Image 1 (cartoon, rainbow, N blue to C red):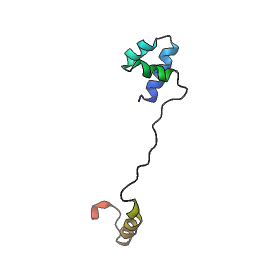
Image 2: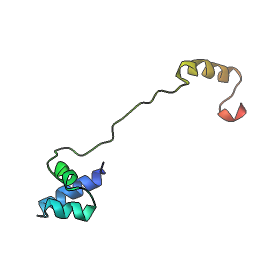
Image 3: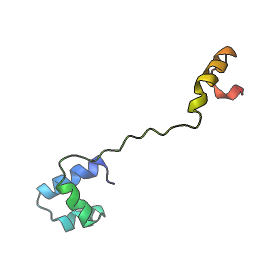
Image 4: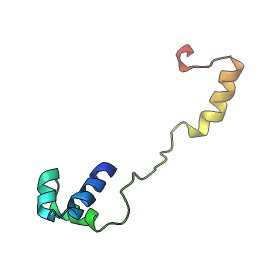
Length: 77
């Protein structure tokens, strides 16, 4: 995946008349990738993922215990 900056650079280079092969060579990417982003209307973005924690079922209990013992960081355990 390319960065947003590279996406706009590809668009700009193509607008200035560079060929897809020249753009790919200049940016060290595949020609198919350059073509894909030239014809794309939106910039790439990172997919947002929320990974579940193994501690999720216990967080309420842990939080309650930490408040009872006045523990505000993990170093005291």
